[in-house]
Length: 187
Image (cartoon, rainbow, N blue to C red; front, top):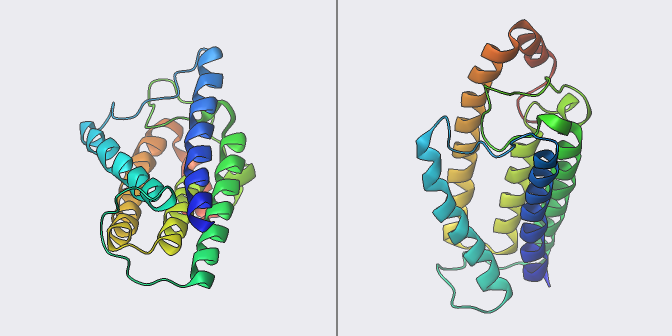
């Protein structure tokens, strides 16, 4: 059951990004800016696809990769709870983001600085949500490869946040710096 929930969470997460990007496109906003500032971002999709395979192979009994480190029913359900919290935070974040939602850094046509809603809790609620989902996925299916993904994902999220912060300081200046003093980077 937990493996199916893990797979559904990933489908819902991807669907939310696609729907929000399409909604913004109808408004004339190009939300998908992934890889435009840092071409190294294009190494991420193959790893993301492999992550999806790991999750779906567990749920749908496809050939598995890697070794399971441990299995405990309660830990798996804790993973489900983390995934659901991450999914709810992600939804709240994209709603709070409004027309400023982007996948990647957009210095040419940024939306207004968002400091309310989920962004009053965390400067990076989307990355926090992704981190919760990734950690939850590992607890559901504690494979050593997913553990590497958790460590690598947290490093990658932090790297991206620091790049975005540099851009946000350029774009919003003092307003963003004041916001940074009021709200934590993650939680």
